[in-house]
Amino acid sequence: MERDGEAGFTVRAVAAEAGVAPMGVYNHFDGKDGLLDAVVTDGFVDFARSISATDGDAATRLLKSGRGYREFAHANPVLYSRMFSAECQPDVDAASDAFAVLTEIIRYGQVGGLLQAGDAEVLAMQVWSCVHGAVSLEMASAQPPHLDAAANYDNVLMLIVHGLRPPG
Image (cartoon, rainbow, N blue to C red; front, side):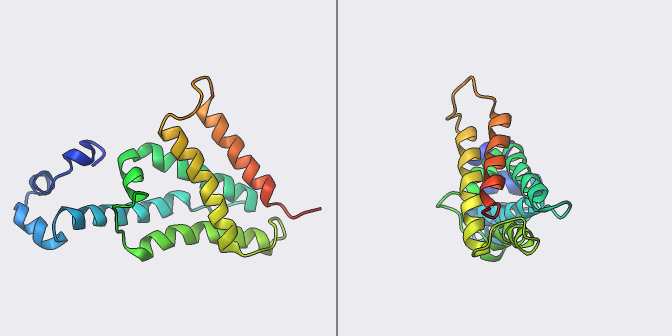
């Protein structure tokens, strides 16, 4: 899909690359939409691995996770766009598992007293919204041309980390 774009991602092309008959792909995935959903589901599994961070304190984990988010999007721009489009129907568990990775980082920081108290899922959604917005703007080239995108993104991550610290 990354090589040929979504328009070039056809059942016939996938079947040819896999060395199987197109009808076999249609039957196994219930057509192109089912095939795309399976690719997106696998994408969420890979994405969860990319944003997983289990070393360091909560701030370090948030930074690593956020950087993994951006790296995944840059390495897989077509898939990333499809993963967050209204047209896809990935496996709910795969998408939820990716979100759970971030939620667990928040909980880890809360237990250690490094991140503010509150509903970890709500805080994770707020973090996800910030990170997703920053990455999506960058991917859409919707930033001023003189802006260093990587430095801007790191600053967004630092704002998130500072904003999640407990008051006081």
